[in-house]
Length: 403
Image (cartoon, rainbow, N blue to C red):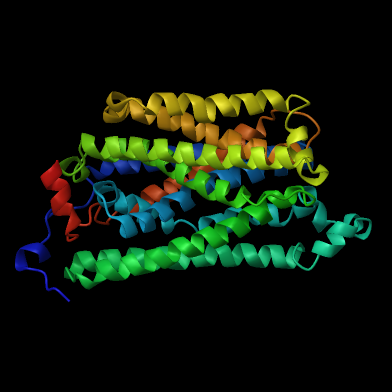
């Protein structure tokens, strides 16, 4: 093991806590107010709307907000494995997001009590009259479904907390062994994420229509989480990088990297979605093409077209511009647009299996406001009294040198 020099073990930035603290407090208060308003509206919707309208909106919002938090944590593992300036300066945001994952267990409780409104296999009468549901019953049943969901979140949370603890321990001690330990755990974690993420996508989304299946659906879900993460990371870093200590280490180069990675994520998501469509349509099997036929009629064709244009064509064309990727505010605008399209993607994936025609309910705004606001407030709270820069990571010197 190569020993670090005294110079390498010294912290590069002495005061790594966020300054000024009032800005964090203000952002957290605004997020809490937004979340509280969303909670009140969501509660009102529960008592005044049809159950299917409430649970459909809640599932889409829960998946959308989880995709951001989970995607950010997965980016932290990708950063440890691949290296790169972009991951070093963003690391504390990624680690903080991983520590918020238990929030989604609590936020998912309403869904646990409303499974019969979403999933046909959770209703005994449906299973009794459907041979396929009977065949899948050992896997698709309420106890197994909830148990797997807890296991998925537990696996992600344990890895997130271990990586976060090791990273802060590296800051305290300067021990270079933590860097290699985090890299090895992240390599294992990425494998576990692909497996658990694929299984989660089958449970939470694909089983809304238990007669349909796709071998590429899980990969599209995994890729979508990466895109959600980058789309959130850009505006968050724009806020953080205008203030110390990140203003001392973040430069145009990092935002250019975020733009390139977001472009790559857009392309990977589109690749899996197009490949899935071509394989299913060319196979022309009744049990597969029905899923797409539903999304090509009753108003859903307009949503499908909007996804093609708004989720792929517009971001793809804009992110090709090197000048735009170097202008943080413009890049943040594109990222916010992509975040909106990520919600629309989850709506398109889930809602057609639960309703006959395309329809927008006001709960589709209220529930994301509630879950997104509360989660953002929790995330910002993780920044307080913590170093915002990994001050003893050797890669930080390269970031400053490049800057």
